[in-house]
Length: 515
Image (cartoon, rainbow, N blue to C red):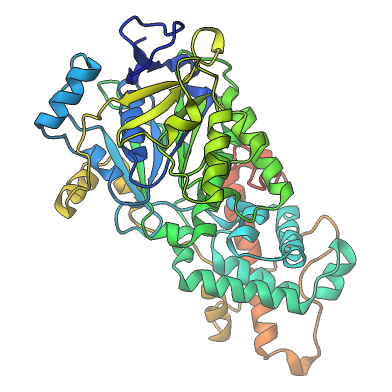
């Protein structure tokens, strides 16, 4: 299997496998993860596009975020120029031709790509607490609310479902606190306000159905090329917690649901995490430990994770040590922070006696980088100053018409473009208040501990809005509530093998086979 040409070394070490001085990334070590770092404007995006094209030609699907809008150029063929021909001649690129890659566009907001969604239950309490920016106490209350739902085998689909459960927990906090742990109205109120804020920012568009299925980001074309999935993130990155938590959720989905495959000739998927520092900023130690565990173990699932950031020390040491393939673009040492980053970058490479790494990092030009990839037996090669090979696609943004044309030919548009809105708490509450559907058969939600329906009220409270909410959500002796409706829908969706309890994985998402 042909390796991916990264570029050509300027100063070579004797250990380079090719006498031509060309630097390659071997497909069989593509799942050993990687790092692409460097200051703004030094060529990181072009390097990522070159790698994405290389993996795609090998039949490896790629998922990457488009923070600035120029990664979308992968969907269009490049144009010839004298500068391009000069670079091709310098590097010695064989069989080069301008061509587009097979691309599918995604967008949490459904504007610049197909909508990408998940359900509240699939995201789980850990990542949802991070998205909502909850403190430890509030996150603990959210864990209890999820536990209440999970113990009853319930999938919370959207924000309205979570709000309904929070309303019930608030009104029955004493009974729930006795069984699950202390909850307070103040914490529930803070969670509800956070839900309102994330909804106003458009985050509610992410929660719902149809939820993203992993098979749809792991497609190949009929001619064997891997599809490059591009997430529009120019607006999403302005909400860093939502951006980083979404990518982390997707990474955890891959980890929890893909089978063990060991070492393959090439990865099953390459996952690019741009603006990687947003993932680790303000992340508690427990979450960082879980991220490290996912990165370390997902290699055996055939997934390669490539972090992209300005400074190599944006990635914690425990994660950085898992990244076998390194591309370091220029860093300018103008501040003490920059000087520390240069020193860190220099120390992470295998030394090359012909190269002063710390000095060279500050002198690299655009399109040049220090590169070290894993070679035979997984041994990293000595670092080389390298001219990066140009991609075959357009190095720049595409037009709105070109984007629409690509989306029109997408294999997944018909599946995700239309929202599926199953019966939820809002509709149930409206029907209850209107006095409709009053003659349903007797139904009740069973709990493994006790009946979690609201306790009976005095007759003068029967018509109150609080009672109406509880009747709509948890039902009465005469009518089916939203919770039981969701339970029955869950049983049809998940299957009987799940049983009464939902199991969650390392990052809080539902573990395996959830659909």
